[in-house]
Length: 275
Image (cartoon, rainbow, N blue to C red; front, side):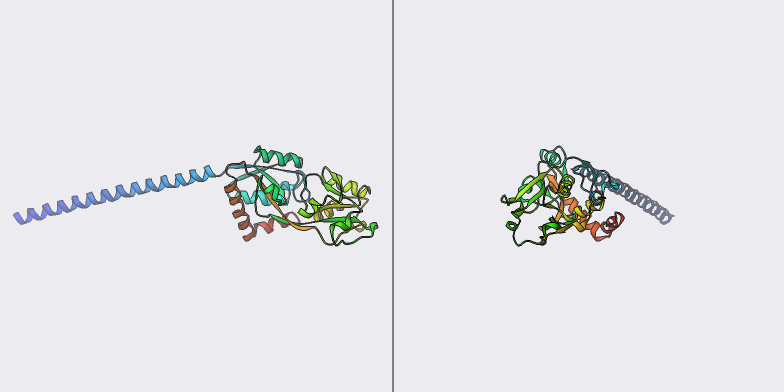
């Protein structure tokens, strides 16, 4: 009889012990779930804090970016897609070039979209990796009878149309001995060129070809692209160094740009715009 009671008490004790152990395990499981939930919320919160809206400014520059183009043009879509991949939202406003540079330098906007590299500008702006490579060169009237030059000094007899505030190459920009005639933008420059007010025009070759293709009374048979071209140049973003997080934003963009190039997104965007 005593043995039976002792056995029953042991069973009760083990049941109570198992209950307490299970209760503790359930409590730990609930606590772990709470901790996991809090961790996820914290991670999401940090992600949302780091992501932000980026304001970009640039000039109309068909066929690569312009207010009149679908999705702002191929270059605009590449840039906004890369920023979206990086977790940011980017918007763009189209302004006169000099004003765009000024606004970003002063910190009123974050980024100038689409610019060639220059050492002096690099002191003011943080450059991204190149998003696209274009050819900068010199286009002459075929009737001038020249097709090439050995040095820029060979071009001293000619009036050369350039865009005000634009960067070409260090050598060309510093060539004060050349007769350079400034225009406010590329279309004014092209009009002056075909009106014979300048002999040669310094311009991105692809842009010139595109603009000439839209003209009714002129075509590429009237001109010659002088050999050699001035340079193959990368087209970058420039972020104002006054913006506190410029290092992070440019790093985010560069990383995302590599990703969309690797996974085929970049190529798909080019194809969708006919490039």
